[in-house]
Image (cartoon, rainbow, N blue to C red; front, side, top):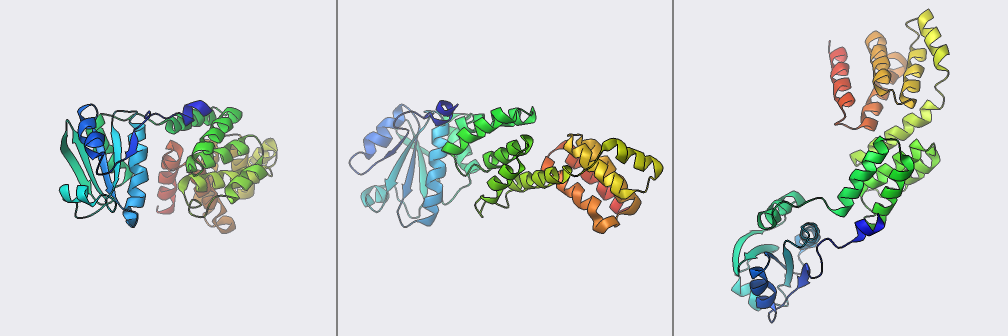
Length: 300
């Protein structure tokens, strides 16, 4: 796995620096063999500092189908004049010795990918993306050890891969190591702390910690049979359902509390519902259907 993630998908020479003396060979001549993207930049250009790494990432993901050449216009003003560069970052695409496409200014990663794909054809998933998919499948199958191993390898190469950080925390939860999960989440950089994946993992952790005190299911069911309005018993039963990964049953019990007495215990059932939706993720089918049912009850 480590070798898969670490390998250079683009091959040698996919990203090179060029200058006035080598520009024709690096760009014009090279574009007769493979499309060449030229990034005109300067050390003082703030947007260039963001665009450059994104260009390199996308070009590397193209697996050698396209080449990136970087030109510092401060050191190569003659080229900048010949190309009539008036603003940077400026990016040109060369093919068969001629400029065929380009853009000026900052771009999103998806826009850059679209630009490069016009030259290279469709770009497949990167090794990290492939590994993340494998880890997600293992996590979904409750194979927490395998998932944790893959996430660990991803984080060696991409320490800020937020999905891998959140995934590791979820693995710790699945392995019964709540303190380990909390240590991971508490050490997250402040700029990543509000990411949906991190907040979802944190919600899953809080629910897991609460589930440890849910009580005996048979006893809770007996209490509800004796009194359907025993909201604490229903709430604890929902917690037990969640702990057993019976998410739909947990949601149904919480919705029933809201339907019967929405303000019970300072709206504890609604608050837990929102945590469950956050833990499952906004695109999960149960989150979507549960939110619709909750809205129907609240606005009836």
